[in-house]
Structure formats: C-alpha cells, structure tokens
Amino acid sequence: MTDELWSVVAPLLPSFSSRPQGGGTAPIEARTVFTAVVYVLTSDCAWRQLPPAFSISQATAHRHFHSWTKAGLWSRLRRSARAGGDRCEPAWVLEIVTAALARSGTADRKA
Image (cartoon, rainbow, N blue to C red):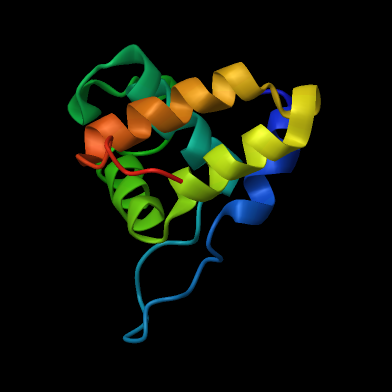
C-alpha cells in the first residue's frame, strides 16, 4: 500500500481500545491489518486463505474487518476517496470499498 493511500485510510480507522477485562495480545500495527484485509477483499479469497506472509492470523484480520464495517469505515473511505482527488488513488479505494461492502452484505448502501 502506498504512503498516499495510507495517509487517507489511517485517520478513518477507529482507535484501538484495550479489552476491559485485560489480557489479550499487544495491538498489531493497523497498516499491517488493513493491508491483509485489503488482500482478502480484493483477491476474493476466504479469510482462512490469508497467506502467513502478512504475519497476522486470519481471525485477527476477520475481526478487524467486522469491527471496521460496524464502525462505518468503508462508507467514510468512499466519501474520502471521492473528495480527495488523485492523491488517494480513488479508483483503487473504490475497488476496496466495493469489495468490502459486497463481503459484508451491505453493497447496496449508499455513502
């Protein structure tokens, strides 16, 4: 992922919050997780087919995808791409958003 695209995505991601009961593992860098999620979305593979090269578990990628979907990330990202001009690679962002909305079952929602 380019730095330009990440500069658009990063501010839109919900902030990490630790679990109230404690425990768990240390947070994983959001850029790594986002890249893995984008891979699954745009390659149309199953979550369980996420290559180990991403260094995160399929469950982690899937959990973040659902969390981001629930938080409205994909609609915000689409609006940002439409408003951001060429600096944010709008065609690529719209492809990511379309794949995310299709995977989440919300493809017919308008942003």
